[in-house]
Image 1 (cartoon, one colour):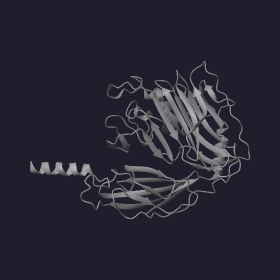
Image 2 (cartoon, rainbow, N blue to C red; image 1 turned 180 degrees about the vertical axis):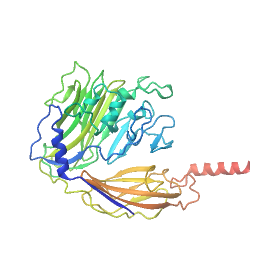
Image 3 (cartoon, helix red, strand yellow; image 1 turned 90 degrees about the vertical axis):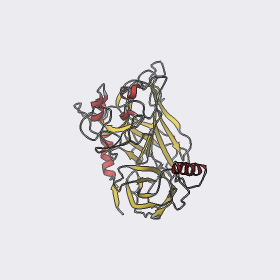
Image 4 (cartoon, rainbow, N blue to C red; image 1 turned 45 degrees about the horizontal axis):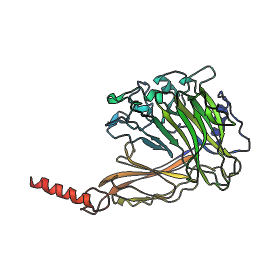
Length: 408
């Protein structure tokens, strides 16, 4: 069993926010009395070698990429044929993409990379994002959706934006505790790089206590639309490749949790949207006092193929990330999930008999604490041939097929 704690000092976060002020931007000022409830700069996200983009320099891209029909899933120099299903989950963030396996692997939806690697893919003003005072290219990690680069790789002869296909991707934050925050004071602040074309559209959305997402800002690419302003953040936004934005989130009375979502849609071979240094701030409430506290796994060492995983409460934790892998380094997860409580059931069809490794990570915006253990899956029912936890018609068909083959 191993324990690892990663904390982020408030002093470090404060310095990062001061640095953000150097960005060329039109942004409202954040009142000094506001408290910080969430911060994300992507620096804890792992990067792996490129697949389609001719980028040099080692680890470059989000850990989950792929092409149809047998995508490549990179871990160091090893390659496994594990299909990219159009989404990834990491540190509580979830990314979805509507066209998995189509287009350049690195740009199938929002990807995490560095500005330096992004510029290697192509320049075209990309290097302006978070550039130094003398135009130095930033080495910061960023989240970027780039339909322009996505459209450049016709894998197996498939034109990515042919036949009416449109690029749609959503990047959704973990749940953030805002209990006690004064109504109407919550804001989101983030660095943004936006380049429009044709009808490419982007939105910032918010959800309170798992209600449906509502749009708080929309960037359009249509020059005849009303212009986007901070006072009226819905409309045409021209080239804005390096800015710091602060948007009101209009939190209602009594809201306890919030999630934000960055979405880009209606895109073809257009340009991009990149975001970084995301902060959620508000007046009142109780900012997190530190990283999550230690906790204990209570999952039995021997499990069925449809197990319920469990653990004790970790103080200060907002959510728990769950991974199951075939190796103790978790380089090839077979299951990734998120839970807001202290248990999670693994769906049928994921696990078969054998030895696995379980990792549960308690998380908030100040850090993480993780616990790991080895588990053994042993399906005690010999008639459950497809390991889905029940004996059904599929098992009968598998049995009859086995008998037929044995008689041949």
